[in-house]
Image (tube, rainbow, N blue to C red; front, side, top):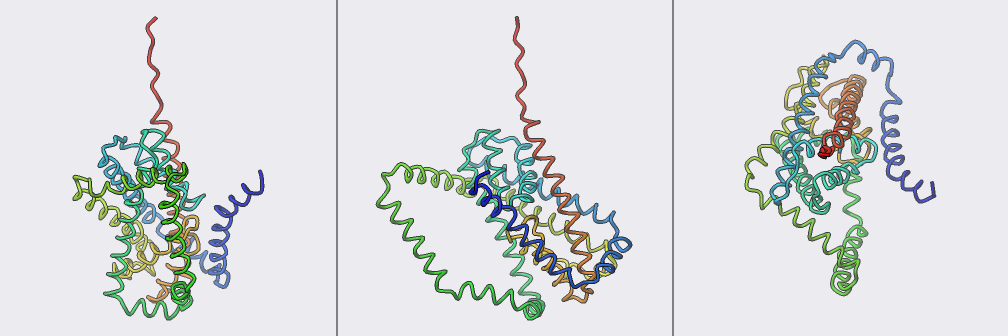
Length: 335
């Protein structure tokens, strides 16, 4: 393995995982591990947590159906089983290589359904943008109706707000954006005859065609319904686990929605399975509502571990099922 391959592996796998594990170690290093372990052994209804997993699987299956709806709106044919298995496998790949799973699932559909990869990237962008909008709407609603919580949360964790503000206060961010836009404009205006630029234009056109799937879609109502079902499923996937612990059982739906929103924001950090950031957000949120630190830590550890293992198992099933269900049936030859 050459140096470039080692560096690529380090940046894609080791560095994000190291960051997540370091944050996880920092969170738990000063806690009473014995007390946390006692909750894990005796204070959890694992049957309830296992029941919650069905809603996560259901949401991911609907995500596959919604992606298939986007692809078919472009006039392409795709097997329903393929988009479902590709979406499930997407999460397994992301557990190893953050954000690579999205590219992998497009590659699988290109391989088995012969749809141009760049067109699929366009539909994937719409898929992700719609989820970002949903998280944004949920977050805005939570902030509006629970402003005191967020004020308290950032008061207890000022480093989060300071880091966010410093990013936008830096002049170099805006300079970099202007230089990037100017560079793209120059290349496509004055270097349009170069073969590489022509290929880039063709690729961008295909991506744009894929993005237009949302406007070409005849069943927009179904898309909206499936989006709502996906996020309802994800919420129940998280919230039902509250009933598995004595200290979260009576917190109520509002607290569950706030904790779910904070955990969803944490998943945006490009770390395998959200390890570290997810725990931090959930622990900090539960503590704001009176849950003891060790109890909140036990909750985050149990729920995240079980749900991550579930994503890995169902994702591995999707990875294995794709080639198995797309085997070409040999044609019998009459002698």
